[in-house]
Image (cartoon, rainbow, N blue to C red; front, side, top):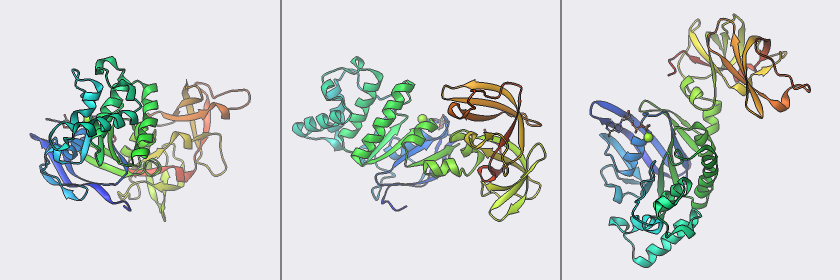
Length: 371
Ligand SMILES: Nc1ncnc2c1ncn2[C@@H]1O[C@H](COP(=O)(O)OP(=O)(O)O)[C@@H](O)[C@H]1O
Ligand SMILES: [Mg+2]
């Protein structure tokens, strides 16, 4: 990584009793980056954040912040601040008192004049300078979220830790706040480490995403790297949408592979998606993004045909649920409304369609469980 590392985790593990929440994680975050930990509930995201914040102690391994080993340091000795999932505002304190809180205690203690200036500045950053005298319960959910941000920023941390910061908000507000969060990150230039289970949020906001699964990091990379070259079917399925279908591996042609599809058709020039070695005749999984499949045969495309099981209207696009012969799982494709024929017709339920996909847009993996 070209950037100076500001947070590093080296072989960090954590168990709660006999349950291992984190299995020897390695992570390096560059100064000024926006990194997201993404994964389903229970995969160890909050645990990772709490270890960095100092609210849990690692069983083994090493954590550094700005070059210093903080593995055994208490939270107030770490140059990080956390925005908690439930905001954790003090209900009996005004907005200004909440934001000032971190400046009145322990290592963060500041003289009153500086405290007032920092509170004002932090509230201005989140656009709520006029709400300083309010009580938390007099604010909307979105405003409370911003106060929690302001409180964390008032201490001017080097790294801001955000645990599902927008998950309590409804969809419209969440989308608006995503844009604000991104702008705030750009404006402040400090490092953000966010946790979310929402892949769309992770894609929109992050410089890099670490996809987690069962206490491991499954893959880390930029949003487009993860989307275009997922390392496993799990990542392909978790980031964006992916059609995963069974296939048989037939061998490689240099960097590409030959496969047999469930209907018996063969396809060569397929992208090899995983490091796991496939041998001729092995059961495999192929992943195809919905937008890479299109209706209509092409000269060089794979000869796929399927039956339309359902047609789902999404406004600007249709989603077609398709069934291939000999495959139980449905396959979904997107048809933009602007791309359908002038008469507006979209293949109806029960009709037979031909599909094409460019071979390099098919990724083949060793078959593995995708839970
Ligand atoms: N204090 C705790 N005691 C026991 N188990 C815990 C504790 N905190 C978390 N866990 C367990 O560790 C796993 C990871 O939790 P967590 O890091 O909170 O997941 P995530 O934030 O990804 O949903 C979960 O199975 C959770 O039940
Ligand atoms: Mg969590």
